[in-house]
Image 1 (cartoon, helix red, strand yellow):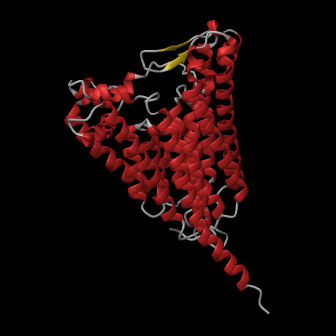
Image 2 (image 1 turned 45 degrees about the vertical axis):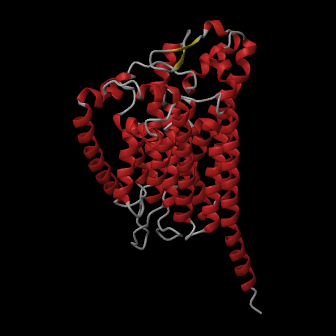
Image 3 (image 1 turned 90 degrees about the vertical axis):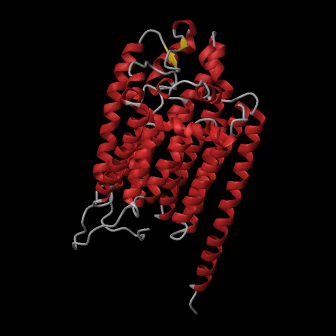
Length: 434
């Protein structure tokens, strides 16, 4: 008697329930995030007052938020257009939050649509990871435009193997919102010839947007984000501020935190200049590690001469590595930056399940969600103590949460780097291209 039909039916049952579980968890998390938002709605508005105030000043675009690229201003204008001339700041905030929820849900649907036809359980794992991560981030993911950057980058990673030119265009658009996403193109090295088409799509889109920006705002405004913050110092949340944070634990007065002209909380005190030098050296080291991981993941022909397909797992893992390197290497780090990690992490978790590496998927998801939760505890609950605390008792709890968050990110970077360097690129893939 052939025993195979029973496992097949069981597998089919698991596949059917995977979609229900993922959808139910997504709805539950969205409801939970909405409850969190409703509790903080009148107390925590993030940068919403700043955005609204700047956009309604009635001054030329050259004078509006020079730290932001012009396309970012277009994005921030969208809620104001939707509320009309009769709307106020509260209406702007509410529409802004609704659009962020739409972005969260839209990425979940896209993630499911792309991966479920190959493996419903893998797709469910990715959706659950994204839902848990975004909910753990709390209000900060709803009150900043960084969610748009995260979703554009994640969408590019999802679509790159089938539509590389479109993926490049999406990365270029994300790069016009915040410059760093263009480096995600390096993560497409695992697909033979893929990166060339990604770069072509990105270059064409970047040039087209540049022409529009140049005509509408002028050269000086176009390059202002590059020059505005060139002299920024050491932000308190940066990994490289760790030695000064430890000093602040013992003597907060000797290591003060101040809001600077670049609208960032920077830490000062003995060792600050050395920490900035270390940050530059660390950035070079992290870049070298990511470059090595990308090189190890390049496609290699099998012994029988067959050409490899696109290693979608490697592409997703490299995207996570690149985002982590950007976060950890930078001397600036604000709470909302962590949202960039969510979409590529969810894709990497899904691809790990798809390639029978559930242990990796669970580990990465757990670390990522824990880092997001630590960020939510830090901001908004403990941020006042972190930046304004005057005694060791005031700063102890927030600094410990910050050190925990950064340690989790370092652990995730080390884990993924080791997996990439050890695994490299398999000669032939076990799953079909989509």
